[in-house]
Amino acid sequence: MKNALAFQFAFALVMSCGLATSPAPATADEPAHIEKDADGVPIQGAVTFDANASASLEVKRIKSGHILVRPMINGHDAGWFIFDTGAGICCISTPQINGLELESNGSIQANGVGGAKPADLYKARTMKLGAVTFQDHPLMSIDLAFLEPLVGEKISGVIGYGVLSKCIAEIDLVGPSIALHDPATYSLAQGQWTPLDIKDRIPTVPGSFEGHEGLFRLDLGATGSVTFHQPAVAKYDMLKNREVKDCKLGGFGGFVSGKRGKVASLELGGVKFEDVNADFALEAKGTFAESTRDANIGTDILGRFIIITDYPHQRIGLIPKQETKNASAEQASTK
Image 1 (spheres, rainbow, N blue to C red):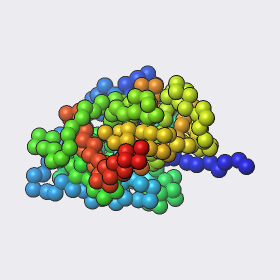
Image 2 (cartoon, rainbow, N blue to C red):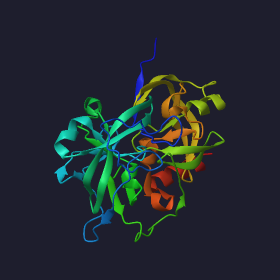
Image 3 (tube, helix red, strand yellow):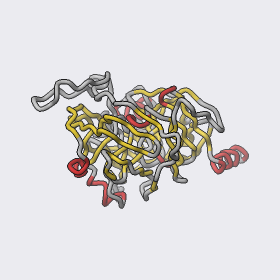
Image 4 (spheres, rainbow, N blue to C red):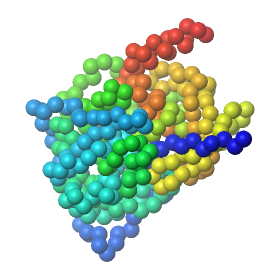
């Protein structure tokens, strides 16, 4: 009997400096004065923190496991946005553009799970999240209407690198809770910082799997536990003698074929997980074709930590929750 296709939706919107993802050529309608960074993204304006306002955001966790926040854009309630460390730029769903007084801001070549494609850029004069106000904030357009029947919620956009790069974010996926803090005044209350590599605007940390050292992308926009990139699947012959079924891995740009099974062990943030659900990309296409990182860690694993991102200082706190510590200790005692 043929296996039913399983689906994973990962919002891996990577704005890379590499040849595969470069700024799209300017068009006749594109303003010539737009100043862009090395990744082809328009330069952001000033960021201010209101010391008298709460750092906590209004949040909602939906059935897919994603956590949503609700920004104000140009003084308008912009609706629910996915909060996503796997997004290299903040995004706005195309049906929402007209009502938010956004300004055209050029274009970009965006890379995702299904490959690269050009996308239009817009600018919000102001975007406010909790106590933080972002001036002249770039947004990439993407039609997210297809998500509504899948996640049971209207998704108006994605909050990604443009926000995370300017503040410290305390994230509890399961709580759920998110708080945004000023990097100039923040101090870590528990745990310790570990170095963070922000490659292609996506956070990367070291870890291991089945005895192999690895580098993992931390992707709050990805459902599931771990997805191994095609080069890692081939390098370690990961499908050999492994029970798997067919699946489709989807996100920005389309879908790639994959297999779904388990890995015997995965270690992240000093915690070892065993018998972990895993997906294995079969096509060297889009973000899952990347060879410099081995896998993408999704919400099922990340939800077991309190995550504290500090992009300005290139460090991260991965604080295991008590239940995660207890499970890890119980696994160790049964060996």
